[in-house]
Image 1 (spheres, one colour):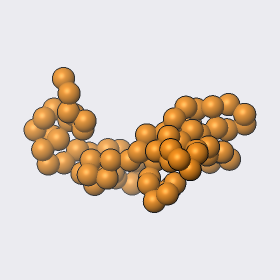
Image 2 (cartoon, rainbow, N blue to C red):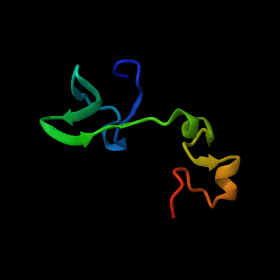
Image 3 (cartoon, rainbow, N blue to C red):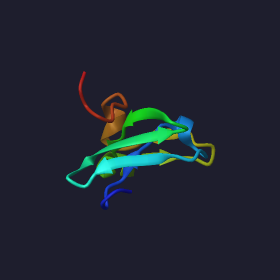
Image 4 (spheres, rainbow, N blue to C red):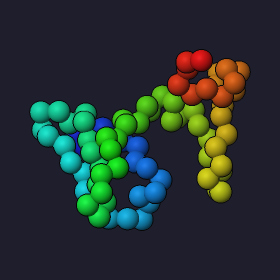
Length: 78
């Protein structure tokens, strides 16, 4: 969390020590690095979409509500 905003990080970084880089003037642009390698800019979590995704104990994702009717597309688009 940076300035009360949640961000998604790459799965490859789970359990690793990371650096979070951002400038106070542009807190929405957050870079993540591990062992000197940049993994790019993080994407802010869409809380509305995230609240509609159910996960079971094994981490499997199940879509709910309108997303199922729309072919499982969480972000719209074609």
